[in-house]
Image 1 (tube, helix red, strand yellow):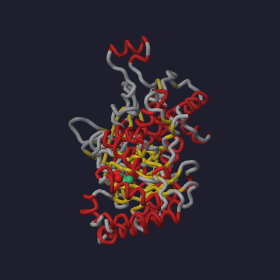
Image 2 (image 1 turned 180 degrees about the horizontal axis):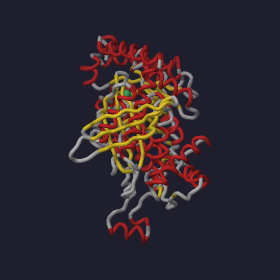
Image 3 (image 1 turned 90 degrees about the vertical axis):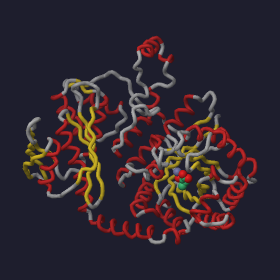
Image 4 (image 1 turned 45 degrees about the horizontal axis):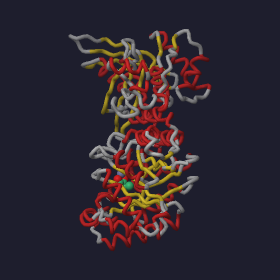
Length: 531
Ligand code: KIV
Ligand code: ZN
């Protein structure tokens, strides 16, 4: 049997800490469930000490994950280790992931520690973490710029103190594959107890080599790889999970390693990440971009028709992109609709199916053929509107090229209808102003994206918005054949989340403790933590 490579997913930690990718607790839980279905071995759920919100999400994820190990990141400090342990200890398989930088540049300028003092810190904190938890990962931050002999000393010490996984990150995305190969080979040769731990790779993509470096690490003997969906992460991101998984599958002839990834779940997982964060997947993104399996040129199409292997090294089906031509329309019954949902990988309750079917029928009245992409957009936007405080009853918009736009909107709350009118320079602006007047809760619009779900003229319009108030930023999504309606629906989805949050008694407490955490970080975090 081929060697097993463990997939350590850090979408919810290294990925989530990148600008634009933050998720709330509910979104992180949903993502964690999806990662389990995808078959990752370890879910790094967050950095428990970094904020009360992070602590809560790690704890919540630890309590729902069934099969995967749940890890929390911690600096090599007692208070971090305690927070990490408290957050993961209820998991079926908990892990504490400690890190300390070991390169001279980090030791001298960031940590202000000698090599000896850092080694002592590793000894003390890995031992302490191991006294709490049997599964300990230790990362040598900036490993690829660390002196190799010192690296071996640190690795041996960490293993002696109980580390079961040793991670050698390319923190700044600086290394090339040959250097990774040399580093891992050197550590395997020169660390006496290296066989007592799993070696892990964690590569950043600053020079576009994260996946290549990760593969090189595997070839040299690493058996855990750290990665994120769509490669999201700090700066240029981390190694992309889907690329590693498909590389190992497609080039099994030269990379004879197994993972537990169910590749058919890849497309759906990437879509969920995109719809949750509101960040679109770049069309040319390997494996999950919209063009990843599209063949435009005549020569390619001709070859594909003769034999798909001429230009296709992996099938769309292998990553969960269905190629079925079964298009639904107004005569399709609930049975066909239900089959289609299952085919697209959705498991819904009867109640949800009824609601979705009603939405589907409404769309059929306006649009003749409903494609898979339309159904995916409907399902995902209906999920958005589950927690409704305000819902849209009706609207009329008047707009033209030589006049301001006017929007008259009727919203419903607790069975009562509320109506208002507003003027704006465009129909969307006028509509959002009317919404704001009705709900009597000012918000700002931070981002607005409109796109067609399919390529045809009768395509559904999908709008993604980000709105914010003092409690935070909220995303919403709306889908309709009418782009103004999609704009109002997406705004209401976001506003409903905002109102739920600002009305929750925890909101004030949370922002107070977040502030005190931020003060802690600002006021002498460096001195206290020694970082
Ligand atoms: O990039 C890095 O070095 C990290 C560590 C904390 C593992 O993210
Ligand atoms: Zn990282």
